[in-house]
Length: 254
Image (cartoon, rainbow, N blue to C red; front, side, top):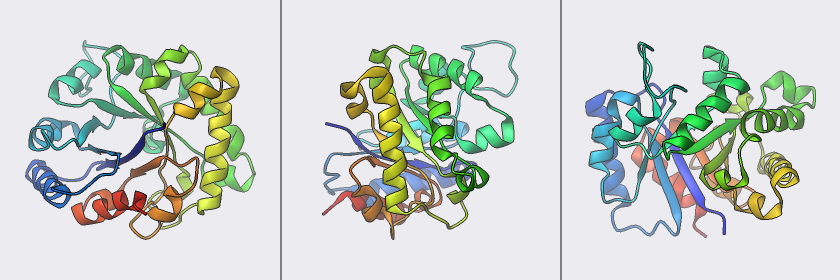
């Protein structure tokens, strides 16, 4: 059975005290609540991984890094490796986010090496894919996500997919207030699953969780999560307030 996951990407937000306060607030709103099999993840900035992980110990909420360098160590000023992120308390890492692709020029070839580095260190990978508005308008969105998956992940053995989660981001919907309709989300999630199945077989594809990552919020989460190929969300702005994030998690409840 596929895992249900709601991951909060805090991006470049929250100072150290603010991050700890948000972790405390999240712990408080989730206390005594049935998560009903939903895995909850938060991804603070690198400097705040350790204190957030310490605050959330024993809650079942996992902590992810927002990125890693492809090398394990070395003269790479300002970078953070998989072993360093893991030692700080991260058990997962977000890779391939559209902002990393757009602002920092990360391509599929580079991302493939980052995926390898993360998996070698035992970090689960939340791998982001998705099209920009021009590609959606040109009806190229299926080809774009297929290419991103193939180029960055199809060198992996089938066994590695136990530690891969995919996150579909319609880039045109991130931070714009626009959201793919539940039908649009289901259509492309189903296509992504078929791409994986064509390479690795139905059994592997059926076990891969695919998250929706485009302006998912308390108002639309329930309808989006109800779609059969949508297994949760990679949440941006709505993860920066504990009550809003909990409301998104509650989108899985009947």
